[in-house]
Image (cartoon, rainbow, N blue to C red; front, side):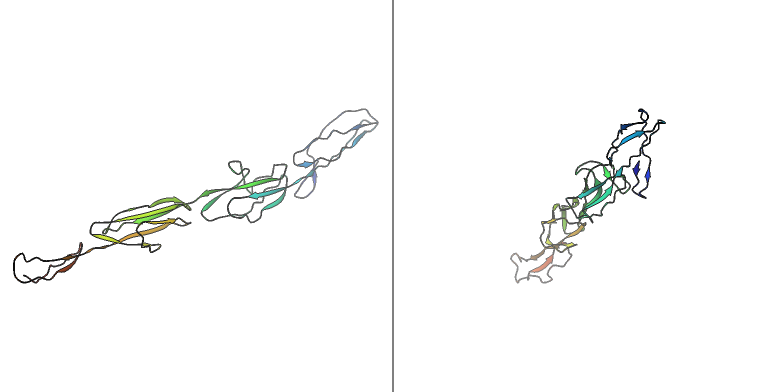
Length: 238
């Protein structure tokens, strides 16, 4: 018989029949039951009427289950669980990764959940499996001023990302705006555990227009004009 771990009552697990001579003693034959401690053997006395009954009581074993992870810290590092009971599993999380579950090996293996029954008859370790998260880097190119932006897309957590922008003809670089204000046109950063969004910005160039009277008398003062913006030339004539 084996001992139930819930209410600690004994129930018949296996029945074995044997033969021998009446009014004699014969050695008992014990079996090994996975996850249980085998009792010490006893001799069986067969009564003159040829009957004999001997009950053996097997005790359910308790095993240490340890939890291992190369990321984060589990809410508890080990626990003692009786064979045949369901697993009690710790909570765990870490930045930039999605927890996939507790498995029997560090790579691959079988997943164990709180519905899984302990069927390993020894101390053992479960390993946390993770999936690296991906985050979107969004780059906005305005209608004017920027001809191209590069470096946007989806990247793994902790990836080194470089964003760059090319000012359009008639414009010069100003800055990135959005999640941060960045004055460097070609900007390198390590992606954290969140998406990023930036807009490239450029400023139109200012040009000076000088006037040549081409042999005429008098002078016309120079004038300032901003690229891609309508403005009048100097009203003064030579």
